[in-house]
Image (cartoon, rainbow, N blue to C red; front, side, top):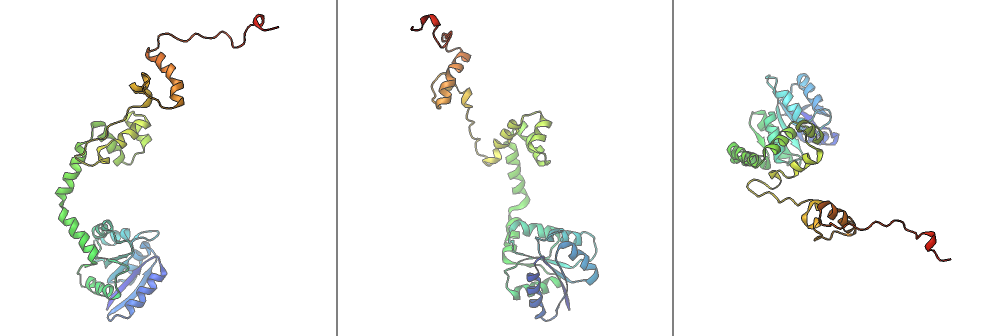
Length: 261
């Protein structure tokens, strides 16, 4: 008799799986759990052979519970991750955590029963999409991923590398600026100009000069609206292009002697 533990925070899902497995010969549902912590505690009490484990659960998710069960070195039950999130990243994380299988919840009932039997025999139980994800990951190889990372790092300047290392440590932009003695705007500029934004081997985008520092504005060749036209005389006096300053009026109103009587 194959002893099964159901771990899912949705009671309707647990009820449906229980009804489905009860109709299969040689399979018995011995316990249920609403989160990963309850599942880990129920293993010692009920000693299941297979666990159908959901990933997204409160308190402790399914991946953390799987790691907790497999890292003790004891003979742990076979864990089949059963989830609605059929993503390649989750497949890899589940396999690294020690899961024996990965199935989507829309898998046919007979396939779920067959996966439970395979897992109880110590065989892998993977859905077609999960198997394809593992094949693609194995085909890529560690050398290709390492070379891709080295190409991206080679495009960084020394300062951008320091900023990237600080980001990898989990520091905020303010903390990065305090460590490297940079302003917050400079930190953001380094992050936005990193070559990772365009990909390895691609040229960096040209930086647009600041409008107030642009030679076109200083020489009066750019028209950037009413505000720029008002500020143009001040910019000319600063740059020395306007050597004859405007005469300053002594007063707005004429003297009383000039007024009409």
